[in-house]
Image 1 (cartoon, rainbow, N blue to C red):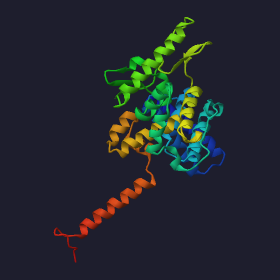
Image 2: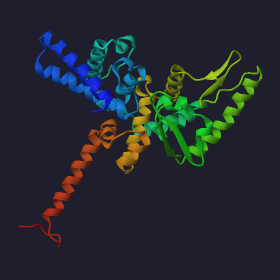
Image 3: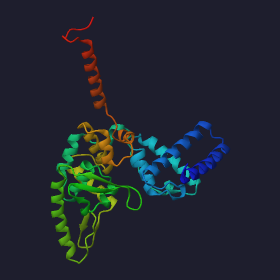
Image 4: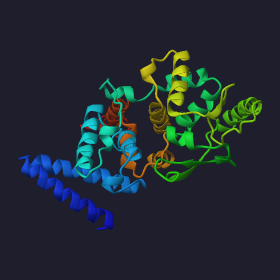
Length: 314
């Protein structure tokens, strides 16, 4: 066992003893231990903190957006709560201190957009919305990765992505999408206009990709402003406000790749996932894809029923 695993195991033994004193059932205690252990294993693999007292907002967001993203919201919420109870026992009330948001609609199929709706959203985007939606829908970037991105990260047909986590996050490099050059050219012209506006009151323009300049200030877009950009584009596309989010766009882009026949391992690497299972859980399967599988199965069985000359076997 590594050092952090030994430390975690010791804390889990203390937690087990506490739950036993409270007369919790053995099956319940074992399930708590499994969920906590899996969460910390995932933290370690993702380059995040592995020690209970240093777990922060980045790690909890990782649970919501990555590790538990394929689950029903209620199930994911319960698992985060179980991790939170363990952390609180270790003196870290981080989960309680965060105002976590959870979807109200529990249906699984609301987690991605239909490809036609995604195309309509792209056509409806204006201004800075275009590069934002392109990054999330076509380049499969997380919101935090778009926030961390700078113009210099786009170079020679490649994009350096700075993933989730502390100290700049875990990096990866992906190729441009066929539309990236066009979107980047449009964005650079728009950025120059913002730069001119910033120069009027001698304020330096941030290196961040998503920037703005008003008569009052110059700065990089915050989370709420980025969310607002997505909602505005969704409104023009005729989509419901709760139908589109940064996370939905990323998952939709990954599902489009899957439907286009892109190998799962390629989608995994583009997303920045650690395993193909994580990616498969993330993008999921819908009824339409299952029905297609049934049809392929039936076609195969019919083929087996026939001989080489097209007549059925006896």
